[in-house]
Image (cartoon, rainbow over all chains, first blue to last red; front, side, top):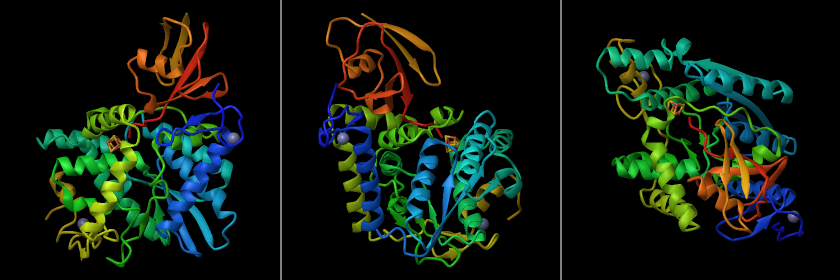
Length: 314
Length: 68
Ligand code: SF4
Ligand SMILES: [Zn+2]
Ligand SMILES: [Zn+2]
């Protein structure tokens, strides 16, 4: 058995970068300290905040909701609610949606569910089908990501959120970093900061990532130890994306060279500060002339994709 | 020694582990998996990668990565 460096009890986790082992209690303390440090360091929340947590029903977003609900008991000015985007992925989202509703009812969280089908006109499965019929490139994760971000911002704003918290962890962030570097999407790096979209557009709800400096494994362990690890399901499109391979590559690297992940995050933060855009909003300062939402171009990505699918006319 | 491993969301596997003093990380690597991607439990206990495994152990691997 391995012993906790703090109290000597049976350890549940060994931090690879430091080599220190922690028991359940001290792991949870460490986790909480790390996340609070991130919140403080990057000024993610103010004293009064109407926080909406973007949830999928997966372990990361349930863990974030759990964490912020507990923390909000100590901060008077905070209100914490949840928003789930139902993309319409059969065999997957129904399961995680159920897990989320169960959690929300247990914890008495106010929430809203917005679906692609109702808000955009087609479910993700139907978009994939329609795209195939029209001979468009097969990119489920692109449709998924663009419309999800679009709806998160729009619906959170309608809910009166002052900030939208997402459960992106260190692993997610560096995977996206590496992916964007590989496919030459350097302009997208600025949205990978811990806080984005503050001043750019009145319709843009600021986004924050409280799990920015904790590893995916640590978030999973937090969920397991708090008994909120949901049913295990996997998106049927997940393994097709580039991210799947990148994640495997980075995990293999970390296994051989401890500390690679934290180093990559530091590299990202440096680049963001060099391009001077840690506060940059992903929408950009313009307004889409078709839907009126924040956009980097004259017509936003969501409307461009809708046109491709024949949902709207130019 | 023999250890039974069940991956949550997957099937159970019996693994033959050669040698004494083998650790959780050895079992995971023998299966061709990465320790970064699983939390390992024995019963209701969470194990670290450096904990020893014993003959007849039933381990549950909880996936860390969630596709989606
Ligand atoms: S894997 Fe792709 S399609 Fe599935 S939830 Fe993630 S982004 Fe959406
Ligand atoms: Zn301890
Ligand atoms: Zn638009």
